[in-house]
Length: 298
Image 1 (cartoon, rainbow, N blue to C red):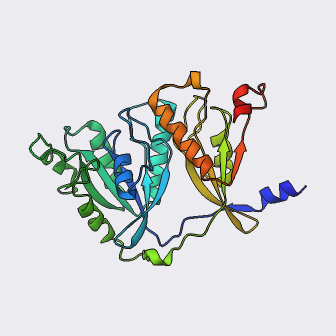
Image 2: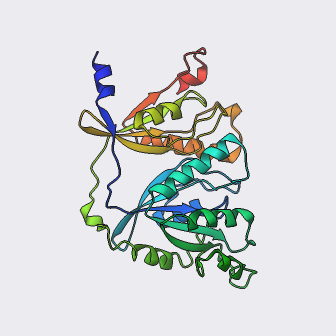
């Protein structure tokens, strides 16, 4: 049966090794996803006042002054939480730290040093990675900032930025790309080839993330029995019979009457965008349950 042969002859495609990977790490709601959007100059990552919005490990290609690099957006670390999803978020962040070349450690300058900030600093000091210490929310220079309090971490003075307003983000990027000397990062060397996109769709808890992880052979997407675990679309390149395909995991789509606030609205917009940008949509249903009207609508 040809379908079996196709599934056997595939492998995950790794990102180009000589392009640096930069992980943005910090506790919840310090502005990591806002910085991603600022650097990428578009609304790539979901930003919301509710903490712990980012969960899965996400990759974004970015460039500055002709230098190309990958940004790894991570979930906010909460080491005190015993919740299953929070533990998985930490494991995803740990993977991002391990595979990154440079780490942007972000803190909130408008709030005092928290125990979480201190615990993250301890973790990062134990790595052999280059750390760029960054203080966000430098919006009101006359406001009460806690810059001096963060010096005890041993990373020196943080680069003061406002990811929301773009203040000093150019200085941060200049510092970042100055550390790329051993990498081949000229953007002209990496012209993108068109890769067919395959979007995995379905209702919440239909097994989309489990299938996605199995296809790419990596635990990129957090899997949990709680509905709505996936909040943003994530993708990965897989080689099947010597041809590359981009598989995209998406947030589950509910019926209109079951939707829960504006966060779910933004997640749905990301899913719709993924559908529009894909060549094939793979609709997944739970065969242990009856097909519903929502399955048919998808």
